[in-house]
Length: 308
Ligand SMILES: C/C(=C\COP(=O)(O)O)CCC[C@H](C)CCC[C@H](C)CCCC(C)C
Ligand SMILES: Nc1ccn([C@@H]2O[C@H](COP(=O)(O)OP(=O)(O)O)[C@@H](O)[C@H]2O)c(=O)n1
Image (cartoon, rainbow, N blue to C red):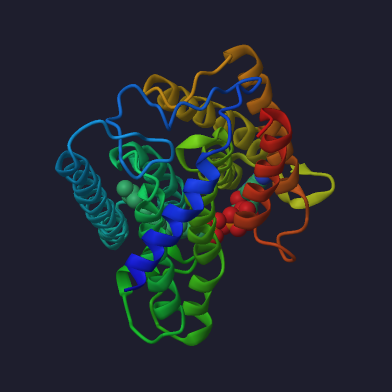
């Protein structure tokens, strides 16, 4: 019932939204609705099915089947990723802090990489957002110690010691929870139609992740206005964020989702990286988690520089 309501409401919402003219942006010409590699989907605004009705219904059913399959596959991938790092940590192959950061880096990036396996229907983004939603609920349930999952605790908490006291598992309700909420926001809000989501997640996942990994190891020269952060960490955030975000945009442009003017695009990505890196370096972690400040500041900077 909830799914039907969601599908009907999202179809109505995107029928209205989809009637907007396709505006050619300074950098980006959104081609998602008319992606040459995508088969027409009858539940897309403006689509005129010239085939017999049964063929249109088959196309809708094909989209639905594809999105359900893609959702299941990505859910399994998410569970497998956390379990893999739990195993590596248990066998002392990698340190717990490194495990957490690699999960931080890889989860979101692999999630964004998986978006093209979903259909080109208007509801595809909601199927994709179901994956971070499930993980959000999982973090809440375990964060409130309603259920015990040693592997999850070891893979995504700072301590990694699953003694299941409420204080420790409550950590799941901070960084990790904000992280999956931002994934949901970017999936539903920007999807494959705007570079803003891709770049913002590149900064949150890769930039913030490598800042920690490099900063912990090589961050002897501290930032004068925030001794908890280092120049090495911030510089690595800028470089990794720029390279990964640009690489993700290239991936989506090769698949035909964006047509990008690369000179101005790289200038815009560099600006977003600079803004996100400065925000991350500020002594505000106690006030607002990096998993909120970094992506939100990236979204604002990307909106102002990409034009939409
Ligand atoms: C450890 C995490 C965040 C904490 O960040 P920080 O506080 O150290 O800055 C990441 C938590 C990841 C979450 C448990 C699983 C998310 C999975 C994702 C929605 C889907 C991944 C799919 C892909 C195919 C592996
Ligand atoms: N710009 C940065 C970011 C992190 N770091 C290092 O990485 C550690 C963890 O960074 P963080 O507090 O942002 O970690 P999370 O809150 O992202 O888990 C810091 O205590 C620093 O040792 C750094 O040196 N420079």
